[in-house]
Length: 193
Ligand SMILES: CC(C)(COP(=O)(O)OP(=O)(O)OC[C@H]1O[C@@H](n2cnc3c(N)ncnc32)[C@H](O)[C@@H]1OP(=O)(O)O)[C@@H](O)C(=O)NCCC(=O)NCCS
Image 1 (tube, rainbow, N blue to C red):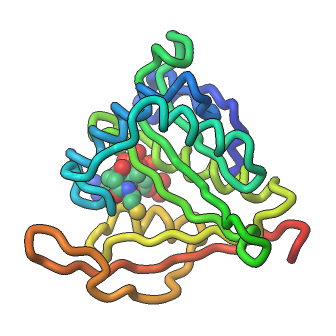
Image 2: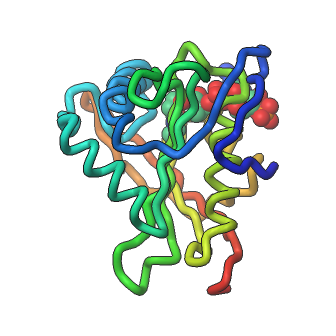
Image 3: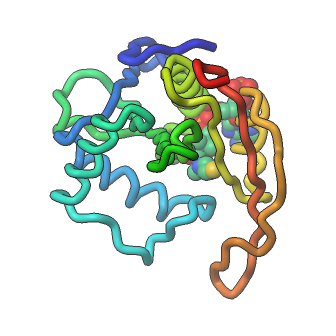
């Protein structure tokens, strides 16, 4: 499904939702969202024990994504408060390669606060990121890696056309246990294809 941002509509539970590109004013709220999801789920590569950027650094990171033509950070939030005051419910980030040889390929990472799961927010965010990638004049590929045990996310990615490309064995280690990641990719066409 094509989802162009900014987007407004109801989530699957009928509550108003908006998707938009993040900007530097979102830094503090974005960090709160990331701190929450890394504590709520074991399925992020980052853990709650890892340091997050400070607010100033995060402002610079969000500004860099907004500036670079092969990067974007899209956030989902309840409409009403202005950016900066609006709690972030979910996010998806595409980070394209910096060099000429990888500028066409972006890595995707995403998460939704547990309170918002199962209401279509993750699906909308993924659709919005893929729509953005398809409309990019540069990107022709989106890649991601997902824990092999993360059935919900793996099914979500497959449903949007991602294909499993390989296994990164024992890539992650937490609480003394190794986990495999599945590498997935999708072609998003574009001028370079
Ligand atoms: C994976 C994640 C982003 C999905 O977000 P979400 O808002 O719950 O997703 P949606 O409500 O849009 O559901 C996505 C799909 O998963 C299915 N689904 C959702 N929750 C499910 C559950 N508990 N069991 C089985 N299927 C489920 C839905 O049916 C939906 O499929 P559909 O679009 O074909 O109907 C969210 O669970 C999350 O943030 N998890 C923790 C972090 C994470 O795993 N990030 C991905 C790292 S690679």
